[in-house]
Length: 308
Image (cartoon, rainbow, N blue to C red; front, side, top):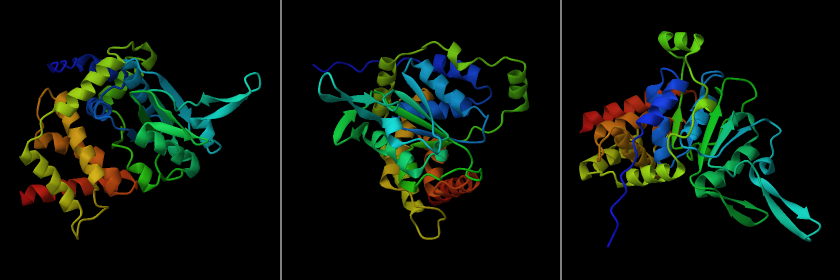
């Protein structure tokens, strides 16, 4: 007899806790949570000091996940990230010493300041949940999430991420400046620090939520809507790069997560429209400044609405 699915815990305490740390950014908080629930990796692009690292740490602490932060500087080597084999003379053998990549949430801070070789060291871990060192494969912990931050590409000392690595990030977000009201509260000391957050939920709760996302119902009409978006992005005359099948899978997974956050057991077109900018823009603009990506996603959504 098959056991009934476990009911997912409420995410309201998590949203409330992170919103007390990152003031006035409720939509961005929900998108980051949707990315985690959909088992995706998150890229946060914005100016320094806008709360990118704060969001990453608060997200990890709310689920009680092991959290590592690595500053991606120009002299960071791939082995500094993945780990190395260390010779043990007493045992006459090599022992693998894991690097900071072996955690549940990795904050890759200012990823575009590292060399392309070091940036690519993340790729296998993000894609397959494991890394290979000296020909031996080592599995990463479960769950595993990379939250990478990067400054604007117009700032000095940055190396743009290649399109193949950009595609490994399910979502790209930009936090932007807070509203005047939120910034006043920040200046008056009302924002909490991430380290004050105790685990609202646990890793087992996160796994239950991720499994619940996969069970969210997607009807044929909804799948047709996603297919229309993908097909329209590939037609001649549409600006930007076409969306791949992987992008379509990511879009559907993110929409399932968003529908769960909205308290529904099924996905509607509004869910797809809510997550499409975060899922599609960095793929369509190839990592260029976000102004182009916003125009591309708006044009895509508008054109498909006109076709239906």
